Image (tube, rainbow over all chains, first blue to last red; front, side, top):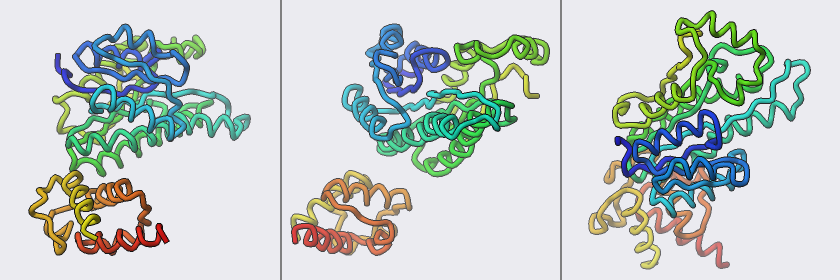
Length: 243
Length: 82
C-alpha cells in the first residue's frame, strides 16, 4: 500500500477509466472522493472502492459545484492530495456539421472542468506543499482525429494546461502530468466503428486495444512518490499505436 | 487599527508559515519573508477572505509590507462601512 493517508479526488469515476483509477488508488490505501455528474452515479464505485470512499455529484463545467465538492471532500476526508481530471464527454461530428453547442459542451466539460478542479484543489495542496495533478488527455489531442475536432481540441488544450500548471505549482511540491490513452476498451470507444478497432489490432505494436487497468497503472505511478521528479509530461499509453 | 494588524498577522502566519513575533509593520513580504509571486497571491486571497473585501490585481502592487497591508485594508474597511 503506497497511498495510505492520501485523499484523492477523481472526476468521471462512475465508469470506464475514471472508475478504474478510483479503485486502483483505493486498493493502494488512498481514500477517494468519487465524482460524477449524475445523481448516484458514483455510489457503486465508492462502495467497491471501500476505505471510506465517498460519492459526490458535481458537474465539473460549473465552477460553483466544483468548489462545493472540493470543500465537502476536505471537510469529510481531511484534505486533498491527488486530483485526477478524468471527466470527459464526446459530441463527435464532422466539422462542417458541428454546432456551437457540440463545441462548447465538450470544451466546457473536458477543458474548463479541469481548470475548475485545479483551481479549487490546488489550495489545500499548496498548504500541504505536496500534490499530484493528473489530467486525462488523449492521443487524439496529439495527432487529431477526423470527426472529433472539439474533443481533440479539448485534449490538446489539456496538454498546454498541464505544462502551465507544472510550471506554476512546481515550487510547492505539486506535480502535474497528463496521460494520453490510445484506444481503450470503454463505453466511450464501444461506439467506434469495427474497422477502427481492427486497425488498432493490426497497427499497434502490442497488437490489442488497451484496458482501463493499463491506464490506471499509469495514473497510480504519476500519483505516487516514485514520480516526484516528473512534471509537465504527457505519458502516452497506447500500445505503441502512434509510434 | 490594532485589530486589523492582529488579523493581518494571523493571515501571514497561516499563509506564509511565519511566526507571529517575527512580523512587524516594516516587514516586506518578498524581501523579509522570501515570498514569491504565488505566495503574494495566496496572501492577498487570505486578506480578502479574512476581511471580506476585494483587492483588485492592479492594487496588489502597492501592498509590499505589513504596514502597507494594514493601511490598505483599514482604508478599504472604511470605504465599506461609509
